[in-house]
Length: 443
Image (cartoon, rainbow, N blue to C red; front, side, top):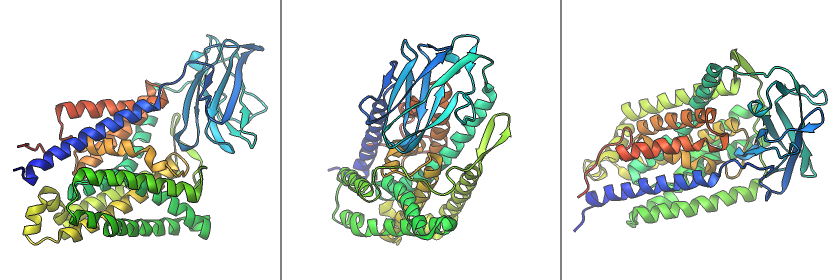
């Protein structure tokens, strides 16, 4: 007869393998940059243009494009220097960048007096009500504006740390929930989205001047959502003795239901929080940061430190670690397991909600599926650091964040999640329990 201690490690390894598989499938589904003059032709709206030198089109020039909801695309101009890219939204801004390394020698993108720009090779274009717009680049004799490799590495490193700290807030909550309940909660992504959506709704009611109050109230609502979710759904299912695989399937269904509920209420467009267009200032060289970036990293570090103190010093924090180590022994020693689990759900929901607010500024923008866009990375960070270990989730998140942002220095930006996937698979091959996870014997 199999005991619970025998089955548990097998279930944990099954969930780890499933998470790695889902992550691999999601990254591969992102696709590779197309080498043609038309990309994403199936999307309803279009940005087109041409790259010319003295009226003659230049072929095979690489143009990258970014936009709302994490949209990225890469296209090569055709034999006449023309390109077309399908985009998902109209009445939205897109950044179009020419890779000057793909231009012929001795020429560069020159200033176009009809447009306003930061750099001639980087332009922002708005897709209007008609759903189509044109972005032309004019080429001429001149020196190319280049950024040193050192500045590029530093900029990506800072962005990676910022992204990693944001991921850590969500991953720590997910890891705590897994450690105390064994549930791989795929609906955790919707807790991330809820923080941003609640903040946006409260700002709409109270005004942008009360953003700080909207954030506080949104976190209170996130705590209430975590408490209610456990009280109404997960606690009854645990009392009925439902298996971990069944609970995981329930979380997937819950995730899909809540995600489309968000779409029903806020629509499919991308919304912005106050200050999302904050001006960036130079640190040194071409390395820039905004006040939002600095505030995001600072608050994330403070929250993580407070969480560490709570986990190590408080009575409930110590009980949480005891339950993660051995729930049966913790219960027999007098610890109120259900009460501690309820507190874990509240804290995990608050951390996820605040992560969603930071993600809305990092992207920038709020969408109904914004949490789902980073769900695979959250699972990757949690698995990489070690399932059920809060500090492992922090370490894994920083590694994933830095890899994701730095990898675009050597690979196309729409493939930047591949670096995190490769490291995840490599570590799991040699250390299946993750960086800070404990090795468990099966049988």
